[in-house]
Length: 186
Length: 237
Image (tube, rainbow over all chains, first blue to last red; front, side):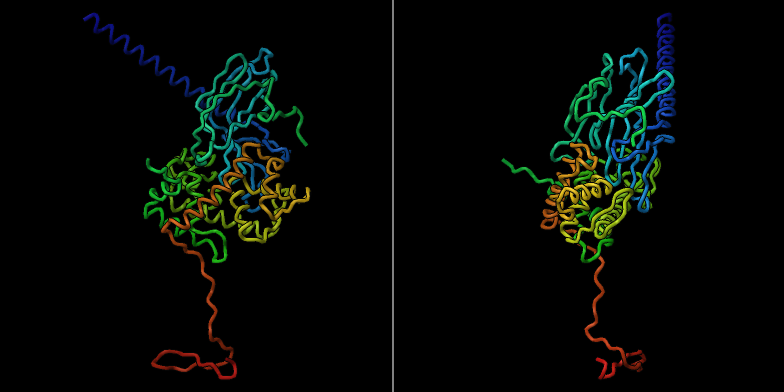
C-alpha cells in the first residue's frame, strides 16, 4: 500500500516537473521570438545600406518591380546565449534567413552583441542555402554548429552533407563571416 | 551489377498522372516562341524538391513547397501562405506560380528593366536568356542584374551567361552560393534535355494565332443554308 502511494507521489512530481520544464521552455521561446523577431538586422549585401527591422519575425527592404525584387529577412526561431566577445556580458547568436526572391533561402548565424544596454547585430556567418541546422552549442564563447549543407546531386530543399564547424566571433574565418561596424554602412 | 538510375528516371517514376497534368496545365503560361517548356518545369521541380519528396515546413517565411518558393514570391502570385493553409504545398497552385514566375523572369530579362539600383541588360538570344532565367530563379533577379552590370563594366558580354556568371561573387553572392547558382543552371539544363527525351508530358503553350491563308478586305455577306458566309471580292484576294 505504502509503495503504491509512494509511486503515485513520484509519478505526480515527475509530471509536474516535466510540465514546469515544458511550460518554462515554451515561455522562453515565445519571449525570445518577441525580442529577436522584432529586432534590427543587417542584410548580407554590401549594396544595401538599409537595415531590416523585423516585425513579428519577418521584414523586408528594397521592394521594387511590382514586388518581385526584394530582400527579406526572418527569424528562424533558434537562439543561443554566450559571451561571444569575452567581455563578461552574455551575448546572443540567432539563426536568421535571408532571401532575394524565387527559391533563395540563405541561412545565417547573426551575432548580437550586448553593449550593456541592448543587443546589436555585429557579425553574420553564412551557413548555406536551405541549410538544415541540427544543433547549436556554445563552448567557451565559441559556437559549434552541426548542420546539413548541399552536396552534388542534392535537391534545393534537401541538403545531405553533414558538417560540424566551430565559429568564433573574435576570430572569424575569412570567407565565413561578415562584420558590421557599429555605424551604418553607406 | 545493376546500373544506377539517373535522377530523371527516379523522378519520372514519381510523376503521377495528377502531377503531370498540373505541370502540363502550368505550361500554358509559356508562349510558343519561349525557350521555357513543360520540361523546364519538370527539371526545376526535380531540382527544387526532388518531385515533391522534400517540401520543408508549412507556413515558413523561407522557401518551401513543391517549387521551393519563398513566401513573399508565392504571395505575389496569389498563393496563400500560412501554417493552416500553405498553397505552396498544392501542386496545381505551386506549379502555376512557378511557371508565371519563370515567365516573368524571362520577360524581365528580354528587355532592359530597372530593378532597385540595378537594371537588367536585355538578353536577346532566347537560349542564352534561359540560363539567366534559371540563375535568377535560384539566386534572385537583383543579383543577376548586378552581375550583368559588373560584366559590362569589366569588358565582358552582359548577354552571355558564361561571362556574367563569373561576376556572381561580386554581385554579393557568397562564394558557396555563387557556385551553387552555376551548378543549378548547368544541372537544370541537363535535366531538361533528359526530360525532353524521356518524359511523356506535353506542352500546352499558347499557340501563335494562325494566319489565314485567304483573307480579304473587301467582300459581302450572303446567307447559304441559313448560315452567314463572307464572300471576298475577286479584286481584294
